[in-house]
Amino acid sequence: MTFKDFNLHPQLVQGIESCGYETPTPVQEIVIPAILAGKDLIVSAQTGTGKSASFLLPVLNHIISHKHAHKVSALVVVPTRELAKQISQHIEAFSYFLDISFIAIYGGNDGKNFDIEKKALQMGVDIVVCTPGRLIAHLNLKYFDLNSLQYLVLDEADRMLDMGFQEDIAKIINTLPEKKQTLLFSATMPDRIRGLARKILKNPQEVNIAISKPPEKIIQKAYVVYENQKLKLVKHILKHSPFKCALIFCSRKQSVKELTYDLYKAKFKVAEIHSDLEQKQREDVLLGFSSGQIPILIATDIVSRGIDIDTIDLVINYDVPNDGEDYVHRIGRTARAEAEGVAITIISQKEQAAFAVIEKLLEKVITKEKVPSELGPAPEYNPIENSKPKPGKRFSPRRKPKTY
Ligand code: AMP
Image: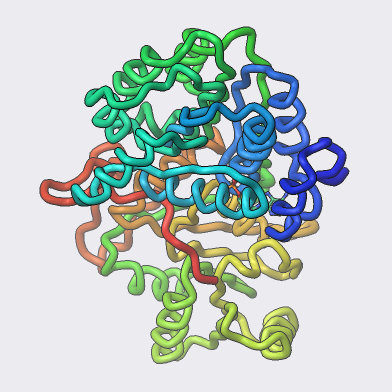
């Protein structure tokens, strides 16, 4: 299947192609036709599945031919400003060859931005991507309305409810016209989301793109530590675990380089792999690792999907992966073929909430091992408490920008 099969506007297809997308992802194959057919949807899909394009492409396609001059046609409500920015970047890319206007509005910036947002809303903009609080601040001033809205998208709805946006969402929905298409996306489907869906969706189609689960034979464990205990712990694990081939993941290449240096100094036989290496260097490293010459490889997620080495019997997540998909791919590097494998995740205090999301997605509580006593006292695993913003600090988003 290609994007042409959806009968999208040719200039939209041009935009998709210039983003380098060749074939639709599974979620796009199901969601795009359903939205084009005018259905309300409740979609269970995680970040990384291509869910943003799955709602943006049909919405853009519709707006091109049903534009309401000076009115908002689509409203995309998201939990964080990072996601608002990310989605508006996607809109910018897809609509490069189209006459579409959009704005991302989110809190936490200065009054100057508020005025720019106000002007855009007053003049009329096709798509608004927003965080709930900031949109309400604009709606309260009553200089624009959403009477011509055709699409409401609630993205990462479970996270919005976790962050306490339920009332704000209800307020926003109360200002919207009855006749519109509503699309609800959520990584998980707790009862609260089902309840929200029952209230706001009309005869919805349900789409469930389940995350693949890791093989049962992988023994999954985790340690909960303070950030400054991570290095000591990884050294402890490497000294005391009976492994042949260990793959250690870090989310950033800078962390890969630092950890490689620290372990090398501690006399471990290690190598590193990330995007700063030339193709030939990467191949040499992988050859050394698969032949057993290098027993410990430290990597970014760049290799999590491609590597297929039967002898890897230990995977260590030096930090918590960005999402469930990355977790499954990382730990799936061990216990290949008939082999046994252990996957250990090291969780710092600020990563506890992200790890809890992964456990929720996998529907599995991963055993938290006792931190070795020589490392000193370790924190409790309390993801709810540790996800609360600290006084004087902004809520810190779950996802970090990636550099592989
Ligand atoms: P999302 O799940 O929307 O956050 O998308 C995850 C990543 O996949 C983003 O970097 C998208 O640009 C990319 N992506 C989405 N759909 C496709 C596709 N059909 N082909 C290639 N990349 C895609």
